[in-house]
Image 1 (cartoon, rainbow, N blue to C red):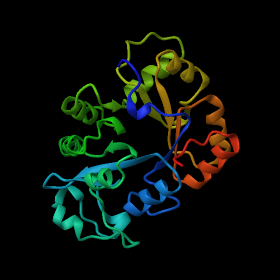
Image 2: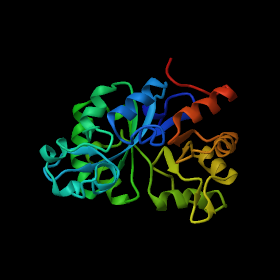
Image 3: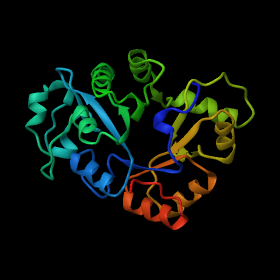
Image 4: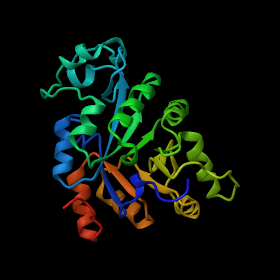
Length: 255
């Protein structure tokens, strides 16, 4: 894409609260997101499923069991059913629409966790006029392709495994086609193979691609990745990441 997408148009490195900061608050709850915003975080990452009646809800697992004790699958419930359920800590399961409305300046990475969620989430993003402050990712390339088809070329998105692998191989001298993505969201290591390396960083920089890394909770690993020049770090420990960035003079959170 030409130019810098609004989602990426910010000072780097960017601090991202993964699931709102799941080691410091109950993950993917409005309380977690509010806490992250209160810490000055301008970016969060979260997960979306679709209910049986097509409502995009914020939750990581296909079932509610881990977070609520209820073993029901989100795909088998209507929104009215989900709305009555509470987490172990007493929090409600949020809708994606609720998250976008509650924090109108917050930048959000949505990971699509089921095939049926592309349509409902696209509708929510469009109604909220939020295309410039969201990024989409998924381990399933078809899900990302589906929401890209609905939202068009203005959508910021991160590729699935094949796109990341192509960029990694480009760092090792293999030619690749011009990528259609402006950001890659990757783990530091995958199946014992280092993903975020100086070669990958150089290949990404040559193509104008920002490298964002998940999920990093160790201070030494944060420092190593920051020394490599990554564009963003996603963490379950937002207070720790903020402290590391402040010590380096690299904290770019909200005032």
